Amino acid sequence: QVQLVESGGGLVQDGGSLRLSCAASGSIFSIRSMGWYRQATGKQRELVAAITRGGLTNYADSVKDRFTISRDNAKNTVYLQMDSLKPEDTAVYYCNVGVVTIPHGISNYWGQGTQVTVSS
Image 1 (cartoon, rainbow, N blue to C red):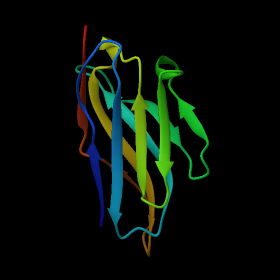
Image 2: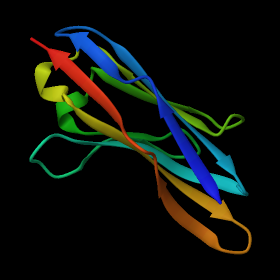
Image 3: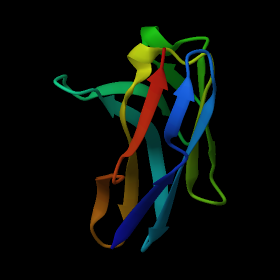
Image 4: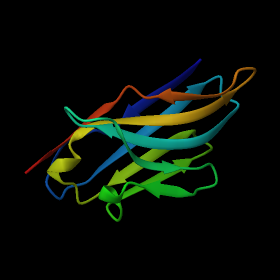
């Protein structure tokens, strides 16, 4: 079993900052890619940012130069630093982690979601 625990969401004003964390625990052999998705009310879930085990990153165009994804492999944790937040960033944010377990191989796991609300 693998558990993901997210933290760091909340209410912030336009232009503010928040930092999300997602820690993985359980029967983990290794972790491959880690990422953050978000889903606004009435919209589909979309990729925000992703990072490989080696540190290569990928961002949605809408968050480039404002958000920074990072990870601590020793702690099995992924972070999302969100700066210059805008009201359109309001959504539930989910972490997604590719975990290798023995003997099941690689599987994707989702966090429980954390609400980020940006007020204008």
